[in-house]
Image 1 (cartoon, rainbow, N blue to C red):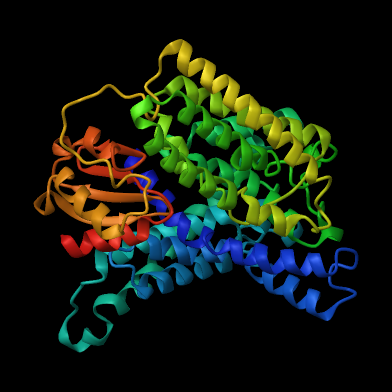
Image 2 (cartoon, rainbow, N blue to C red; image 1 turned 60 degrees about the vertical axis):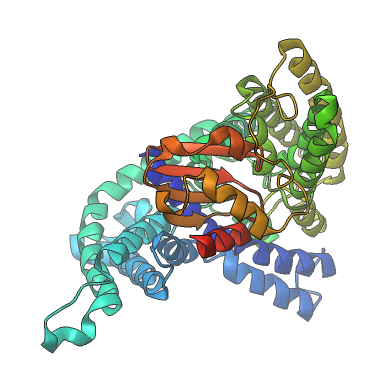
Amino acid sequence: MFAYLQKIGKALMVPVAVLPAAAILMGIGYWIDPVGWGGNSQLAAFLIKAGAAIIDNMPILFAVGVAFGLSKDKNGAAALAGLVAFEVVTTLLSIGAVSQMTGVPADQVSPAFGKINNQFVGILCGVIAGELYNKFHNLELPKFLAFFSGKRFVPIITSVVMLIVSFILLYIWPVIYSALVSFGIAIAKLGPLGAGIYGFFNRLLIPVGLHHALNSVFWFNVAGINDIGRFWGDPAAAYAGLPEAIQGSYHVGMYQAGFFPIMMFGLLGACLAFITTAKVENKEKIKSIMLAAGFASFFTGVTEPIEFAFMFVAPPLYLLHAVLTGISVFIAASFDWMAGFGFSAGFVDFFLSLRNPNANNPFMLIILGLVFFVVYFVIFRAVIVKANLRTPGREEDDDTAVINEFKGEATSNVKLATALLPLLGGAENIVVIDNCTTRLRLEVKDSTIVKDKEIKKLVPGVLKPSATTVQVIVGPHVEFVATELKKLV
């Protein structure tokens, strides 16, 4: 189950990767016209509306992107099936259609159907379409129907299946919607404290890849919160349609702002703690690793190379990291220091959000970040030394012959792929090679023969979600390593 959820999480990165484009367009637009929001500049209006075209259509992007991401051969027919699935569901379950089918006046139809165009439904349609593609893309029909065989059959069967799904959703979507709204509002009603709780669980769920589900409630429009959409949307309508129960306790950006101090500064303090506590003979190697990982975290907000370097070797530190993240989100929300992101809480998104009219005292997040840099360094260093944790550079010496030159250094992707292949059991053990933003996602015949210790000398971490699944944490350049590994296999 966890392995499949992680697979969906990986597929989600396809549409999520589009969001930075919206952030860049709208960020530049708001920078040009921070007062009129496009009213005083045609160029600003052009850029803001262009970005809104992405932000306002995230559900359909999720349907298309997830279907494409789940398809075995990443074929466009899967994306088309995702689009078909989404259009069938959202059309059949619109308020007007539901009213016509049930005979209930439109103003008495459950408000859940007014929110059917959301990311949750988009993801659901994408998952169903992706799986239907994998099952039927090689189907051969009788000769008189041969034109509709294979990939052409997928959108057809998808439309039929979505009729059944729509009928089911007609009865269960109001229940699901109510549960999601209740969950989100229960935390959101707590105001800054709820934001802090969300920040804590956001980090805590990363090892199992379930943070995407949590994010969808607060960042997107599943429960009416839609923090990212509201931050980058029309400032005049920033609080329009907000659930009544959280009015007064919600501020636009409160589920994003507190991540900037952690990703841009706090984790850099952790990197410094790892460097200063490493064994003398490992300091230079760990310094090169942590400088590269720290730059990725600061500049882009990609934190996995750092987090996977210690989450399994020092779980108490990772729990502490989750707690500190929650505290940062709580503080930023309490003082109304707001900034937003389209991809992650790195410098690029921070810079682009500075003149967004929904931003508020964003430079205070820099000061808060400097404080967290010191806090992370002092606390992490003290805990590592006191508990003698085996953090990067402090591992027990062993007599393995694995060369460490590949990890964290300016080494070619070819060399890293070549070094990883035998440690993964060789080409004969690898069934499928795939990747997400920072991880190699592999299906293997037997994960027990994969040499974890040796692999960890080359990359930040290794996961084995199941007996036939292996994930290798590589970093932002993982796509190129995956390409080279595919060539070798």
